[in-house]
Image (cartoon, rainbow, N blue to C red; front, side):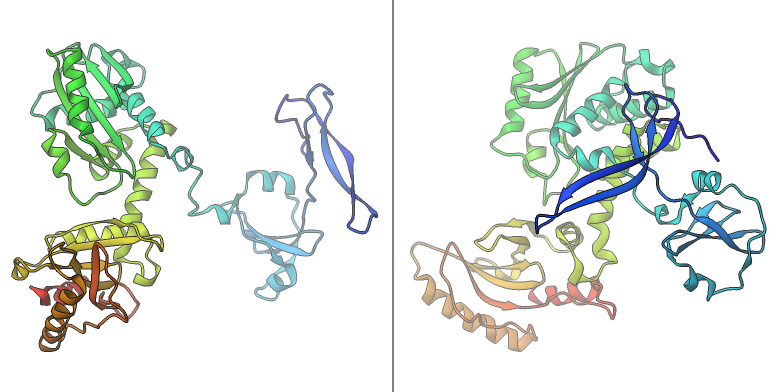
Amino acid sequence: MIEKTCPRCGSTLIEEVYEREHETDDGGMLIDVHPINLCTDQHCGYMERDEPLPEIKYQQGEDRLLLVYPDEKGRILELRDLVIWPPIHYLSILGRGDWEEYRGNHDVEVLLENARDNDAYGKMQPNLFEFATSELSQDAFLCWLLAWSQDDYRSINKPLHRAALDFVSTIFNVHGEPLPLIKKIEIEKQYKGLDVLAVVNDRYAILIEDKTFTKNHSDQLRRYSEAVYIRNPEWIQLPIYYKIADQSHYQSVTAAHYFPFTRKRMIQILRRGRDNGVTHDVFLDYLSRLEWLNEQYEAFKHVPVDEWNSFAWQGFFIELQKVIDGNWGYISNRKGGFWGFWWKPERLGDKSYYLQLEENRLCVKLTAAEEVNMLENARTILKSVLAESDRKSLSMRKPKQLRTGKTMTIAYRPDILQVTENGNVDMERTIEELRKWE
């Protein structure tokens, strides 16, 4: 038997009995009694439940053991790989194979101490950034990675230093600047509202506006650049717009002379770092989180349409945007909102209506105009749209009721996405349907 030691202070654990009283609904008392392991150091106070040990009762050859617990649950232990399988009733296990009475002398405590649970295979390990999801947490990671680029740290952790240089060099290079030897880097958070300001060698200013699932607004990017210029007009500014989620376009970002630094670009940098020997848990956790997020956006390619979440819809719209010139985003309404994609085929010209995908529903939308009776105008356009639908087999329908507002749905088609036999989206056929409007 293994002598158990306290994981907190290292003293010996002894077996004791724990009792806990609690009152029942009818006013009676129940006492829970179970064995525990108690630390012999009274100042420590550590105690844990003493879980019952199984008995090795049967074996299959020399490589498999059947452990039987007091509740008659059984677990198979593979000796070769030291893997233990989930519990089921031991008689069910015996009925599925040729077992014989156990004749060995293994120490069951040692086996269980070293065995790996089969349920753990394929399971994502706890990730720091699964819980630290705010932009401030991401700011902290970016500051930490930037700090490692200083040349002083090359001899402390060369792989991590090289990965940091890869990140910083990318920022320099996308702005047409060669990377200098980084003798000094001063990093500030929330300078005049800017998420990260990193001054390299007293000459270059890296500006990072960091967004997770929000977008830039209110001319903020230009204001940040002006604030940094006022502080030191001699600094060469290298502004980036760091975005781990996706958005429809970056026109306002590039107009402010910020470079869109996307999730996919960062994944490439972090993967190179991992492949070059970075083993730091914070670094690898952040990479794992970005890869998980990327898989969510790519899920539309292999998950049935009926099971898509918001990330899958965004991924689909990003793919659609490659062939149809439109925009996408979240559209709020009284029911909570949805992810949509809207565009106006060239042939519609100056007509007052446009097309909008409301997830799997294609709508013809009319924009309100002050000088026009909207309801009367909608009825006129509806006749034209339905007539065209008949000619081109567009399968458009009239809504049950025409509701006026800033925009108005005057015709729709449910389930516009074309799917395969297993319910996955068929991109080619879906695009063919949408292009019937061109």
